[in-house]
Length: 139
Image (cartoon, rainbow, N blue to C red; front, side, top):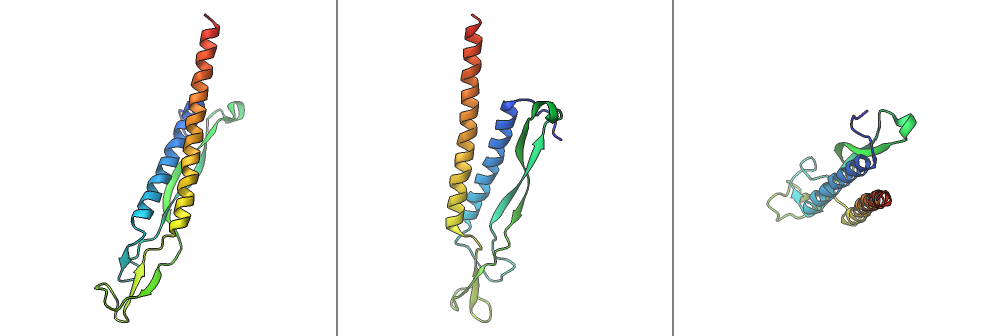
């Protein structure tokens, strides 16, 4: 359990932080999508964050939980073996290995992460507006 998870601002902030990690891994994956290696083991593999649910210490009373990144892993997708006998990294049989990154999948992930991040921004913005209305009601 994570201390300090006490209100909606904590929930949204941690969730936004998790989506930022997700966007950073996507950017890295897209940046390495065209890389070529001389061996399958050296070829770049797409990275993916592992999310976990974090509960407030008083979860049973408050119902507060959020998402955080527990770590980052690489996909099991195998690099594509491409015949390029004139490439300087080609093996003895003339093959190189293209990065194991599906660009279309990464763009879908990017759109989803962007939406999740924007949803959290909207939550915080709405909550602040409601808090200001509440304060103004007492005046």
